[in-house]
Length: 169
Image (cartoon, rainbow, N blue to C red; front, side, top):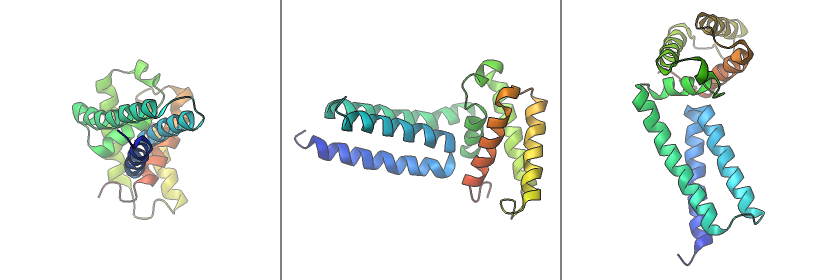
């Protein structure tokens, strides 16, 4: 292609838009893809990789974005459940503690629990937020979630809930 810089800019813009879409639905994936894109662009700007190499990296990233959605379908999870699954399994070491079907069961239970107990103003009322945190902590204890990762999982799940303004509607 003659205009490699143009192709690079178009690809970067498309990936940026996709990352923004992920930010509304799945924070963990959004952070991952945003970091991947930033790393590739930093390497390109610093002259560590060529136009062709950065385009190849971006195409790999686009393929990974496509397969990540298919991954949720393979697990039988909805988009909202996949977002919570990703939040619970953010440190990959957590996957070593559980079989995948247990993680899926925990995710479904978490999503159902949050769906039933949310209120309209839960983001603004501290008492409602505290109640949701308490329910999440109970669920994590019920499944013997690793204590060293429990606080991170709790924070990530709450952050995911906040990202979805109309999370279960």
